[in-house]
Picture (cartoon, rainbow, N blue to C red):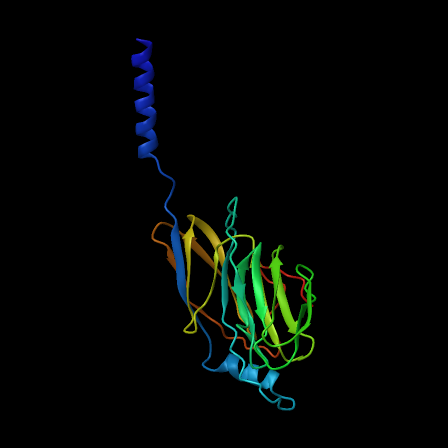
Length: 236
């Protein structure tokens, strides 16, 4: 009798467990648009107003970084390695998004010395001068926006967004982005791009995901706000 009852209860529990499943996650995707050539035009004016430097290449336009605010961070976030190269007297890429605990390598591909540093309070770094062919690395252990510079070449600049969750993306060259595996719920989508005001949009995510297209319009005379959003930093 007892064995039969126990067996029935176990079968019922297994059946209920099989029938119940957590709400399906969705993908937030869309496109970030801006006036054609606006950011690159601003970039050239800002970085190329001084004397020409031998070996200097055009800077890559900073791609938009997109993330969600209000999503509960998972118990553990996977960290990955990334690379920012010093090439043609520029940082490439100019925008990077990573999770806390990720390591970033900074190889020097130029025929001269570079000195990578940042005074951002969340992640202060000072790599010292090193020549072509050498690389140094940093593990970013705190969330925040890192304003990256070169002490030798003041025009060089890049931005590293360090998140404590995986719900972010760097938009492609055509502006497309995709943030997968987002739990259902209501959140705020934030778009950050150098030389533009940050944009926020309310978004509701379900199993079908959500599509959010954003158009940037306010071209600035300075880099975008360095204290915005979930990647809030204290860069100065």
